[in-house]
Image (cartoon, rainbow, N blue to C red; front, side):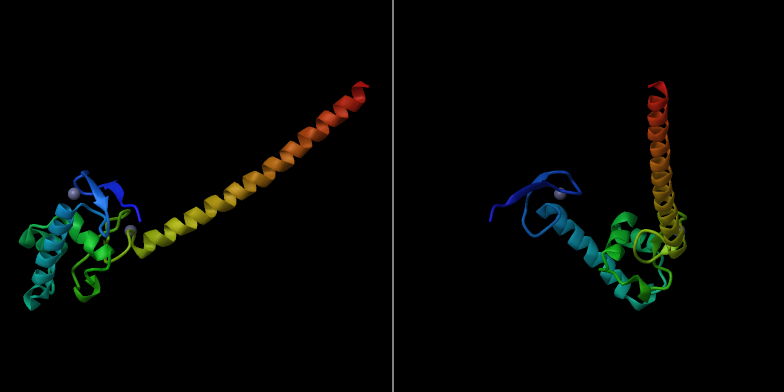
Length: 143
Ligand SMILES: [Zn+2]
Ligand SMILES: [Zn+2]
């Protein structure tokens, strides 16, 4: 099987894509960061920590910690105050990218857009049919 070259998602360096999404250096670094975060969270005293506190205490970026949660590597439900902001309204969430409210709103908006597009498509077809009709009658009259 041929090995694939890819750019590391973190440092952008070209690397051989074998088992990891990132180059080996970055992979090791992320794993090390994961260990710091997990060790911090396993401490009973830190059960109520927020993501900011975790980040400050472990020196791991907020983005990376949020990524661990999104990946499901950190089970944020075990930690009452742990979460990351919804990409839309900033409310604290523990998984995905949007909170439930924004997700509902977003999916109903998508639905409305789809319905509207469909409607526009149907109206458009009728309009086209009517103009073909009109041309037809014009041609007939001109004869
Ligand atoms: Zn890298
Ligand atoms: Zn939201």
